[in-house]
Amino acid sequence: MPLVVLVGAQWGDEGKGKLVDHFAGEADVVVRFQGGNNAGHTLVVDDDQVIVHLIPSGILHPDKLCLIGNGVVIDPQVLCEEMDGLRARHYFDDDSRLVISTRAHLIMPYHRRLDLAAENRKGRNKIGTTGRGIGPAYSDKMARTGLRFHHLLDPERLPGLIRAMVAEKNLFLTQVLEEAPLDAEAVVEEFLGYARRLAPYAGDVSKVIEERLDQGHKVLFEGAQGTMLDIDHGTYPFVTSSNTIAGAACTGAGVGPKRIDKVIGISKAYTTRVGGGPFPTELKDEIGARLRERGKEFGATTGRPRRCGWLDIFALRYARRVNGLTEIMITKLDVLTGLDPIRICVGYRCQGRLVEEFPPDLETLERCEPTWEEMPGWQENLAGCRSLEQLPRPARDYVRRIEALTGVPVAAISVGAEREETVVLRHPFEK
Ligand code: IMP
Image (cartoon, rainbow, N blue to C red):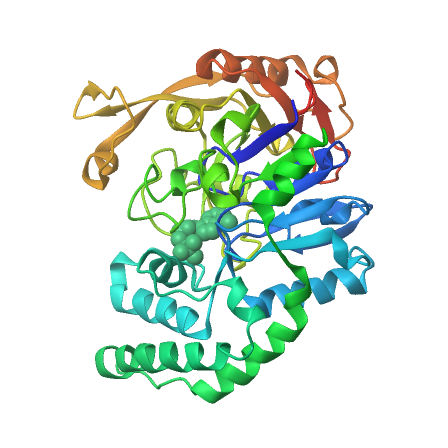
């Protein structure tokens, strides 16, 4: 089982970083393949909390190779700051541990400006983006006007390319959005600095992965955001601008689909969402507030409070299909301690009728009412549990019910923020 893809099965923030960090010890290579610094993976090792936005969560293990694939959009400023922060804490002492695809697109200062300006103009219909320039950077990629990482390797051409792009974006910023223009020369200076710093990390990520797989190494793909934020399969337009599902590992890193051995979906034991958009199982009451407080549900990137609700099996079954999930890992089961009963959404009803498949349009989705199943809760602290048998009976039943309703086996359960606070039923690289 040398190639395992790990993706978010909900609206992001499922705790992928913690599990990637936990299992990275069993991998040789960890790869990011989509998204950018809209992601924020919170990792806790020996009480030391580290948040990474761009660099794969495998970086905290001293001997792992970390790759950033072509499908990621890279803000060089954020990348440099993240590298400095990790280096200062001795998590990144060896430069050869990071390779960045020459084909990855760059997030430019005008992308951030355009992201914020577009959101401000939307008023009530705001998507609630992270404001990191993600959407505008992917728009330029698709419009074939983006700058890519390999442009940083060509300091002769880089200034001309930046000047041309800034001139074009300034037209839009000043004439349409009535905003101040950017200073092209300042952007050129800034990017020549990044070019000097980042050029040594450039490489052909697809080739590196193939070589490593051919040598029998184990490769873990680390998804960002989650299935319901996928640009095609999520709750459009309240989504991010990349494909977040497992198939994106192929396009976002340059590997063939037949090379993937396992697709693991990560789901919280409940549901959260940041930003706008439909959320059928949302709890706007004291139970929701309690989940937010106990689960520390505040965005790792923007600090925004997350919306909280019960587990949505209907959405999870959809995630199983569009990702081809072979296993599920459940996070934050400990946060449900003390809630009794616990509810699970097992389907949606729209205008009195059971909905058969996850609806594509907001109008239907907003009219959907969850249908519920109730299960008894538990009062015990789960942090010390390391096997299924050590979980209180109702917690075990809850996990088994998730398996039965989704038809996907549960491979691990996270019972606390620390790397070791994990119940492992099946290791990712095990058959
Ligand atoms: P963008 O990715 O910044 O364009 O934001 C689009 C939507 O995706 C917003 O609702 C964000 O809150 C959400 N989003 C983006 N990245 C993440 C993430 O890593 N976790 C959870 N939500 C995210």
